[in-house]
Amino acid sequence: MKMEKKIKSFMDEVRQRNVHEPEFLQAVQEVAETVIPYIASQKIYDGKNLLLRMVEPERAITFRVPWVDDQGEIRVNRGYRIQMNSAIGPYKGGLRFHPSVTMSILKFLAFEQVFKNSLTTLPMGGGKGGADFDPKGKSDGEIMRFCHSFMTEFFRYIGPNTDVPAGDIGVGSREIGYLFGMYRKIKNEFTGVLTGKGLSWGGSLIRPEATGYGTIYFAVSMLATQNKSFDQKLVALSGSGNVAQFAAEKAIQLGAKVITLSDSSGYIYDREGITKDKLAYVMQLKNVERGRIDAYVTKYPTAKFYKNKTPWNEICDIALPCATQNELTGDDAKKLIKNGCICVCEGANMPSTPEAITAFREAKILFAPGKASNAGGVATSGLEMTQNSLRFNWSRNEVDEKLKQIMSDIHTACLKYGIEKDGYINYVKGANIAGFVKVADAMLAQGVI
Ligand code: NDP
Ligand code: 2IT
Image (cartoon, rainbow, N blue to C red):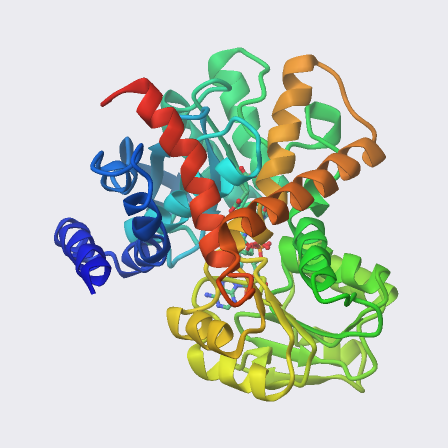
C-alpha cells in the first residue's frame, strides 16, 4: 500500500507538469511502477529524486520548418528535438516524420530511448525528434526540400559528440541522405552526425536490418527459456516498414511461417506464408514504389486484405507488433492469449497498451517491451558511430555478430532484474531496472546538474 502511494504521488507530480501528454505519462507510469519499488530497496538511489530528474528533458527544442511544395505553395511544419538525458553519452535517437507527431509522442519516445540506449551497453544518452510532416504522397523533390529546410535550423543543436539523430517512422535512408547533405554543406564538415547513412558515405552494414533482426534475436533468447524456437511457428507481424520487413526476413530464415503484414490502411493475411520472394515484392512495393499493403493481394490473390483492421485476431504462436504505439489493445491481447499465442516481442516502441501488458503478465506468456527487444537498431547505430570514429568499416558478419551479442546481453540483463518469485520472467521490470541503474549511477557520480 505504502509503495502504491509513493508511485501515485510521483505520478501526480509528473502529471501536473505534463497534463496534456498522455503517451508520455503512459511511458513514465510503466517505468515508475517497476523502478520506484527498486529505488526504495536500494540505499544509494533512495531519496535522490533520480526518476524525477529523468522525466524532465535536459532540453526540448521546437522550431519552424518552412518549405515550398510542388505547386509553389509555402508550407509550414513544426520540428522538434527532445534532448532527454546525456549522463552516459551524447543524445542518441531517431527522427519521426508523421502527422501524429506531438511533444507528448516525442517525449515518450525520448524517455524510452534513455533506458533502451543504456541497455545496449554502449555509451549513448537518449533523445528523439521529428516533425508533424506527412511524407505520404510527397514527391522526392518535396521530401528533399523539407529535409533541407529542417536541417538549416536543426544543425545548431546536433553534432557527433552532442546529439546523433537517426531514422524512425517516415525517416529512412532517403531522408537521412538529404539531412546529412545539408548538415555537411552548412558545417563544411564530414562527420558521423547521423546514423543510418548510406554505405558509401559512412553507413554501417546491417544497420538497415538491425532493428528487425535484433527483435528476432531477442525473441530467440526468450523462446529458449522454454526450450522453444522459431522453427515451424506461426508469426503474426504488424507494420510493413523497416522494422517489420527485416523482422519478417529473419523469422522466415529461422523456419517460421509469417502470415500477416500491415500498414495504416489494414492488414494482409497469407495462409500459405509470406516467403522470401513475396517479402522481396513487399520491399519493392514499400521502399521503391511507396505503395499500400493491399497491393499484396492483387499480386498474390490467395491472400486476404482486411481494411482498417490489425492482425491480432489471427491464430499465431508469436506476435511481433512492429508498426506504432498503442496498436495492440487489451482486447487484442486477450484474443492472442485465447488463440494460444506464447510470445509477444515488440519491434515498435510501446505498441502494447498498459491493459495488454497486464493481460500478458496475468496469462504468464513471454512478453518483451520494445526498449529491450528493439534496441538492436540503436545499438547498431552505436556501432556505426564507432566505425565513423575509427574511420573504418566492419564486415557484415562482424556487425551481425556484435548485434547478436548485444541482444543476448540485454536478455541477460533483463533476467538479472526481472525474475519474479514464482519464476516468471518479467521483462518489463528487468529492462526498466537494468536500464535505470547505469544512468542513475552516472547521474549520481556527476552530482546535481
Ligand atoms: P517505417 O516508417 O519504416 O514503417 C512504419 C510502419 O508502421 C508502416 O507500415 C506504417 O504504415 C505503419 N504505421 C505507422 N504509423 C501507423 C499508425 N498510426 N497506424 C497504423 N500503422 C502505422 O518505420 P519503422 O519500421 O522504422 O518503425 C516502426 C516502429 O519501430 C516504430 O514504433 C518505431 O519507433 C520503432 N523503431 C524503429 C527503429 C528503427 O531503427 N527504424 C528502431 C527501434 C524502434 P503507413 O505506411 O501506412 O503509415
Ligand atoms: O527507436 C529507436 O531506437 C530508433 N528509432 C533508432 C534510433 C537510432 O538512433 O538508431
